[in-house]
Image (cartoon, rainbow, N blue to C red; front, side, top):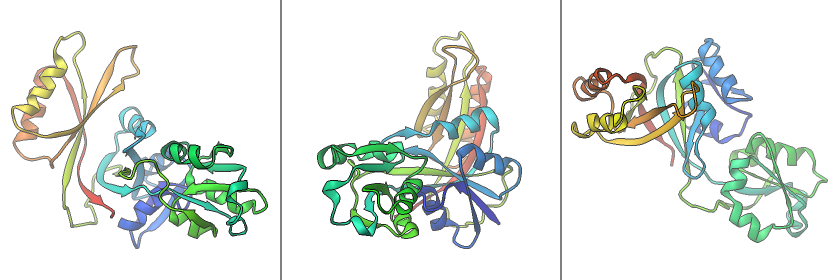
Length: 281
């Protein structure tokens, strides 16, 4: 069994994968689309990509692929605490005040904005494709007075020294990663501490109160929604669909009844999956 993930090596995505898929072969991909295409084409058994971050919000390339390109089945979710560390080449651990450049992924730089402004306001911030790529860049240029913001896995992978830990501006920072398959098959993990269901809902055009009716279909059945998000349908300005997360696995009565009610109202409903949630401590 093979698991594709958003690479390169030592990213937070690989950290999520290593915590759940301990024995399976892991294959990194350069982009979210590349990873999801590999799942669609059957090149890997599973794909793991980021979906949402506490601070930066939804990862729109993931959502748009599932909505517009190919509706892969979500078979699991991994929630990972995001701990951003400040690291340098070992030869520069006593030269922090002289640092000229800080490399990292734009989300990581944004998550550490206050800390960087307070402690490294004169250093240039340069965006990289991933936090791991930033660590690799610093490791490959040992004479450059540069630092990277990345995770502990990246520091170990590229031989960097962590000089400051947990520099993110908010301590409660997590990322949701989804596990997808092209066709839902038996999931290899029997432990299911908690389950969710995700639906894509399109509203009938020019019908006032349609969104209220959608929410009412869940409310009167006492079905708890943990998230509702709009995304453009890409069919015209002002046309949106909605992604809804339900705080339970699909059952035989309540959720199917809500879906039937929505379809009777003229809504389109697509299920992206009913799946277990795993939390990494």
